[in-house]
Structure formats: structure tokens, C-alpha cells
Length: 286
Image (cartoon, rainbow, N blue to C red):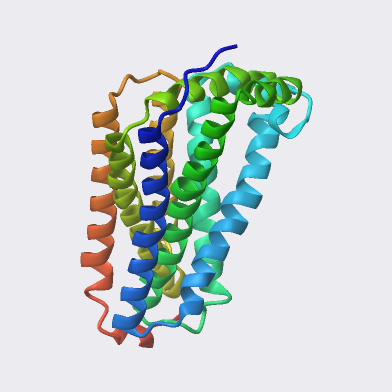
């Protein structure tokens, strides 16, 4: 199969996107650490918890349940049932990150970070969680796309598709579509992705604030399921759009991410973080 060559502009756009994703993330980490003199280990805990709960536990269980063939497993009744129902499929895809990521936050605040009760801990954790997600979502993806572009131009991309076909045949059409997307990607597309990721980052920091106060104050435990609900709603809506249950244009979907990010962050920041003057240290901690 012939694929459209990936041009110099596309490679430059992908390279710039990968570089900016790292630079912006590191800049946020350094500015926050220097300004607040927060322990760097808190940021690392946020990053490590995301890797453990989102990439290892969540993805392994989710793929085994919904996408078994991607793991070399045979299809089964549960996956067939879920995949035959677009609304259920979208809800499941939203529920997994909601439950696993927010539970990871809650456990981290209850265990390794239990003695760090200052309000800055909530944002430090969120920066680590959101920062590593930015790097893995954008930087690693763009570098992978650059590698794919080189393969397309050298004529070896078809070999990769043949390998995918032998292991996960349902992914072949997505790989072929990706090749077309790479040939058309632009600086504007990269800018849009970075813009959207800023507000996704704010959402993750806001969720971290919610779960931080849920973990440190028994009277606010309800903030933990609230964070799960918000996270599930955001990801499920994206799933419903992917499944074409709802028809949202790219700008509409981005506007929803912006709204979720801003409202979650500002709500948590204004109602919880800003009002925490240290008196909460005297409450009973669970």
C-alpha cells in the first residue's frame, strides 16, 4: 500500500511539539519548586503514582476487559458485550481513568505523602501527575510519530502494519489512518494540542486539590468521589464522541476540555486551596 510522504514541515511541527511539551513542563516544575520551596519528591510521587495507577494498573485491566486482542489475548464475552454497546463502551473508558487515577491520588496522600499536610502539597502532586502525562501524551507520541514518518518515507511502514495485522488486526485501519494524518499534520494542529493540554493539566491539578482535602479531612471525604465523577464525565464524553454517539466538532470538544479544566481548577483553588490558612491542621485526619 502506498502512503503519502511526510514532509519537512510535518517533521518540524512534530519536533517542535515534542520539545515544547518538555520545556513547558520543566518550566512549570522549576518555577513552582523555586517559588514555594516545595520538596521535589512530592512532584516525583505524583508522576510515579500516575505511571503505576494509570499506565500499569488501569491500562492492563482495561485492555484485558475491553481490548483483549491488543494484549495477545482472545476476545471474550465481556469485551464483545461492551464493544457492541457504544454508550457502555464510552462510559467504561471514562470510568477506568476516573477510578484509577483518583484512587491513586487518594492512596498517595494517605500513605507516602501523609505527613505533608501543607496546601502546596496538593498542587505539587498535581504538577507531577499532570506533567508526566503531558510528556507521555505529547512528547513521546510526537517522537513516535517522527519515527513512523521516517518509516513511511523509507517504505518500511507497511512492514509494521503487517506485524500489527498478525497481532491485533482490529488496529490496522487506525494505523493506516494515522499515516494519512501524519502527512497532513501542521503547526496549527500542534498548537491546538498544546492549548488543549494546558487545560487538561489544570483539570488534573484541580482534581489533585480535591482529593488532597478528601484524604486529609474526614469531613471532606465526599470530594474523592466527586473527583472520580468529574474525571469520568470528561473522559466518557470524549469516548461518546469517538463512538459517534454524540457528534462534536474539534472546537466544541476543546471548549469542553477548557471548561472542565478551568471550572475544576478554579473551584478547587478558590474554595479549598485559598481558604486553607493552616487552621485545617488542627482537624481530625483520617
